[in-house]
Structure formats: structure tokens, C-alpha cells
Length: 141
Image (tube, rainbow, N blue to C red; front, side):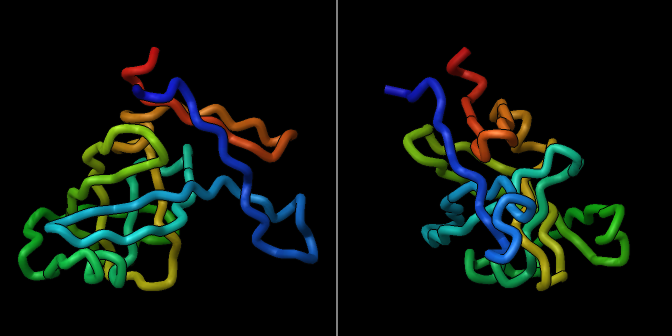
């Protein structure tokens, strides 16, 4: 049975400023070619794309030279080279979904879940004052 919704707490990034540093990090397991990696991914509703750092793609078995679709990044990552990479993702008890990422050579960034295509697969309700967020798949509506 597909859960209707799942609720997650915000993660406190800086213990000296617990409430002010809390961000919506989602535990997610990514899979590609039989390799699984569990990470905490930052849900970023302001990001146009989901973005994956270089070392994570390598851990999933991706080879940079074999990814032939270039992706143009903007903002702080505008100078970073990126390629399209599609992986399977599992979040809690929800069925696995295919997520497209801009796989960047940048190694110093979190996994970002952006509009394409995380927010196309999941609806997210941020309850910041309660330090929780809730997700539901588009199929549960």
C-alpha cells in the first residue's frame, strides 16, 4: 500500500544555531546499475534542476565520459560542467521513481532536489514553523 504522505523533521546544520540552521534534508536511496547509495538530499523548491555532486555519481557507477547530454547550470554552479544522469530513487515507503539529475564535476555541494524532476514526482509541504516537511507522491491525490 502506498502511503498517503510522509513527514520528516528539518535537519539542524549548526548546533550553535539549531532553529536558524535547520533545513529540509530528505533521506533518500539512489540506485543505478545495481549500486545503491543512501544520502541526505536538500529539498530546494527554488532550484530548477536536481543536482548531484561528482563523487556520488562515481559511487553509483557512472562514468563521466559516457554521459553525453550536457546540462547548463545557473547561479552558484554556473561555472560547473554538468551532464544528465538518470537514477532510481527510493524515499521511505513510497514506490521507487526515476529522477533526473544534473551530475556536476563540483564535489563541494549537497545533493539538491529541484523542480526537474523531484517536484514533478512529489508534492512537498514545508511547515517551517514546526520544523517539519511533508511529502506525497502525485499518485496519492
